[in-house]
Length: 111
Length: 115
Image: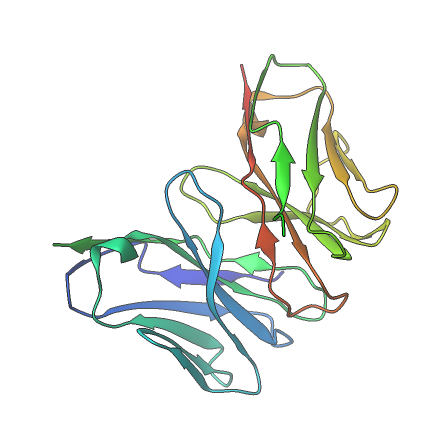
């Protein structure tokens, strides 16, 4: 069945450094790839998304890249700040409208 | 406008009991999703509604789980004969379009604890 793998499960970076989180999906029909940020005890919130007809998208310090051939996509956060500390989830969706989420990456930004 | 709301925020029940979890989506959103999130895991798809009908219920773990959306707005997730393994946060999300690939807005979740 559909599957999304996410790495790493935890990531610690120094404030100001960059963070990269990678996801791989199995369903070649997937065409939409959102990234969600979830702070402790709160709801997931969309931070950026990308569609299959685009290779890269950037929004200030956050960027996402997509490699359809390899079926993987990545989240890049530059100039990290302590408030970036949270759990990040990738997801993939295809024709079934079923979102398949990765297992999450706990990002810690050390001041 | 108001976001997705869920009630109750916390529910503690005993093994074997019946529970209902409610979701109020954003007004006008036709698509509604239920997810289950266990500690340290990503949201796990349960069921998807397009309007009043369950377009995809393949994620429901077994026949103890059932969900309805009778008027195409509010949805209720029903769990019969609860088991300790049902303990998790149940998230609801809605989106504005029928087609996949549109932002989902999540509710705050209901934390279910089965003793």
